[in-house]
Amino acid sequence: MILNHEARIEKAAALMEAFEAHTPFDRAGGRYLWTDAFAVCNYLSLFKRLGAKGYLDKARALIDAVHRELGTFRADDGRHGTLSGLGEADAAHYPTVAGLRIGKPLPERGVEEAYDETSEWDRDGQYFHYLTKWMHALDRMAAVSGEVRYSRWAVELAKSAHRAFTYTMPDGSKRMYWKMSTDLRRPLVASMGQHDALEAYVTYLQLSVTARALGDDAGLGGELEATGAMAETMPLLTDDPLGLGGLLFDATRVTQMMAGHDLPLRGLLRALLEAAREGTERFLQSSALRYPAEARLAFRELGLGIGLHGVSLMQVLNDGHLKNGVLAEQLGALQASVPMAEVLELFWLREAHQAAATWREHADINTVMLATSLLPDAFLTIGGPEHA
Image 1 (cartoon, one colour):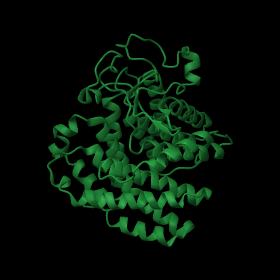
Image 2 (image 1 turned 45 degrees about the vertical axis):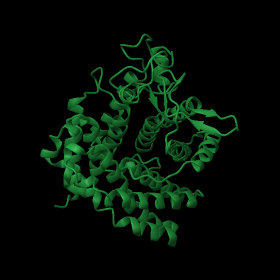
Image 3 (image 1 turned 90 degrees about the vertical axis):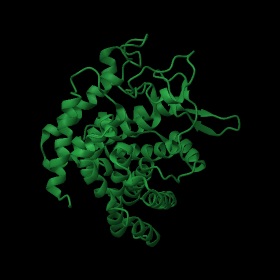
Image 4 (image 1 turned 180 degrees about the vertical axis):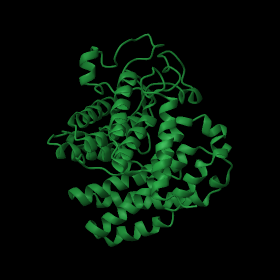
């Protein structure tokens, strides 16, 4: 079975309807930053494909709901009001100035509570790699709608997050905490995420490009210098499907910035593609995809599917603009893995597989990322403005 153009749009729209029905935007509770970042991009993809303004309105409504809920302290937290301390009116103008909560089911670990790795996954706080996904969603909203406020909110979030998560080592080098408290005052997990600095660097570049296109200056020079230096010290290679999807997502964005803005990123792109190729081959040669649905995590696999969809876009850009033989060889090697994206989509579209506990326990994130893989337009394509 091959999913044609119309089927992809139809299934993505149905998945987003199911997502909204399960977590209505006007209902308190239910917001989760990672999931909602992908959802915003999905509504933008549907708007671009179908021209229905209602999808653009849904993206706006979801953004407002996230800022309203995840920009304030939890109901079971001793602290109250907005994370920034601003009044309601001012907070609406500066919704990202103090970051955004993850949206986990449990409150963050208290100052006197002992760290427990298992329970920490379910505790709230702020993740840097979730914040960069929200920066991306806001940036895409700015490009598609032409509304500069979304770009400014993305840049504001980048500056606030960078300031809070980054610290200086005794030797003068910079590092990043993996998880911070809700108020960004203390680290909850001090280790550094493997690709956090890379994600920051590529995202800051993207925000700068979009801001410039909208007549603004992001002013992220210092942040770019710091994250670029940090990213160079971290290994890229992984065989985790979600991490591989992230590498391909970054490579797709880098390729677009090279082709459209002549940014000198060729060395970075080659490193990303080589790590993605080797890691993807390792993953596909493993036994992971032979396991039943009950032993698999859909959102992690679909992250790879989304990234694989970027390979074709990179090939078009290299053929039409970059014309680099080395990149052509690297993309050709990755092309053999591209059909796996649809294999994963078809697997997780089956009702029997969606009945598995591993799907139901993560229903929202699985639903939204499946929709993204089916219709990755607005998530993978950057630049702007694109509004009619």
